[in-house]
Image 1 (cartoon, rainbow, N blue to C red):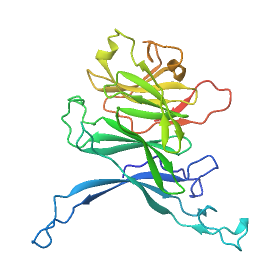
Image 2: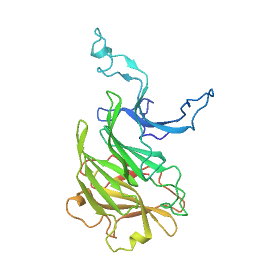
Image 3: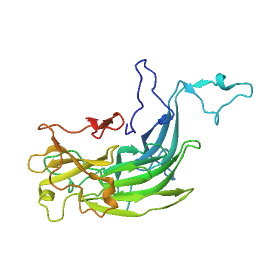
Image 4: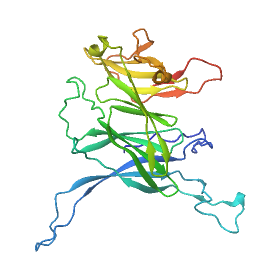
Amino acid sequence: PVASTSLGVSSTGFVSKTEKMVDNVIHIHSQFYSEKIQSNIDNQYDVPFLRQWLCITNIGDRKISSKRVKSQEATDEQFPTGGASTGILCELICAGSEFTSLLPQRIERNMNGNLCAILFEERFSSMQHCRRYDLDQESVVFSIYQLETDTNTAINLVNLQKGRDVIFNGNRYIYLDRDGVFVEQSYLQISNDTHKSISQKVCVFRQGSKCQEKFAVHRIFVLVSGQFLLLISRKSDARYCLVLGGDVKCFDDDSQSLLGGKECKFWFKEGEKLISLIELPSSEGVDKSNIAI
């Protein structure tokens, strides 16, 4: 199923978790649903439709939170351990004024795990935004939810915003527009059920550059150093490439673009596509980042 990044496993086979790690996984549960029609005919149902649920699964074999279960006689060393548990956070909105039928494609979470973005693709695509030689469908919209894990609820902060990719960077979310032309940063100031956002926009390529005609931008990443890493492809042969771009500070210093034309590049072999990208830990004081793809 569509899910957030899975939890790591130690060499002993147990879930590897520290205090700073999220101890749950967010995932989508899909189910066909049909309502019974009120008529004289028995067992007559309406046309079934697909419902999407945002769910959370907590890991098992761990100490249960004191907020949930704590015996009056138990001491700190006598917490019971529990198995994995799954609950429904909310039902997803999978249709809008422009998109009548959407399917969840990917889930992105912030480091604290209290925010998640659901990226959707069109269920019945006209292929208008897909190249003829690339069968992979791009995301068209995303929604952002604030997760309340203690009460198993989710608050919708951003609903069906047009965009091809989205990432979190602190209390901000940065998204790539649907056409891959610019990236936009918005601040989320969450206070109960209200939020305010301030947006800043930067073009991917320099204005007037021919690169925009030759390349398509698909994914954006932000490294620990604050630099952008972009996944692009050459339109002539659909060959993918990773490009190291500007810094996230570009939103504050009025930069004209993320890419200037002389960035470090890594070309994939013909036919290769990116499945996942993870930045590896490095020693303090090391300027260069190491990634695994």
